[in-house]
Length: 131
Image (cartoon, rainbow, N blue to C red; front, top):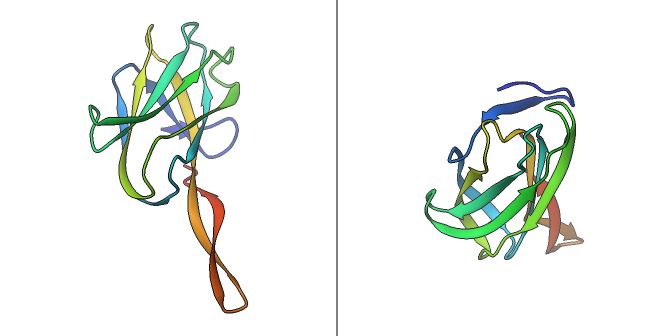
C-alpha cells in the first residue's frame, strides 16, 4: 500500500489469483452495484470477481476493466452484484494475465441507510466503503 496520485492510498502489485477479504459487510441492498477506482498499464485488462464467503464461494458479480494507459491514470469500473440483502463476507478475487494487473485506489458499495422524516424511519440509499 502506497500513497495514491489521486489522494489517499492505493493497493499495488495486484496479480491474478490474489484477493482481498471484507468480513461482515452490512446493510447491503439486494443486487447492489459496486464500483472500483483502478489504474492499469497491463495491456491485457483484468477482472475483479466478487465472491461470497471464500475465494471459491458463490460468484456475486464480475467487474471487467481495461488498461488505463499508465499506473497513475485511474478510471472507475462498476458492476451489479447478484446478492441477497443484509450482511455478507465479501472476497474480491483478481484475474488476468501478465504480471501486475491493477492498482486499487478505492471501492464503493451501495448500502441501505435510514433517514427520519418527522418520526418515521425510512430506507434511503447511501454510498460507503472508500479505502
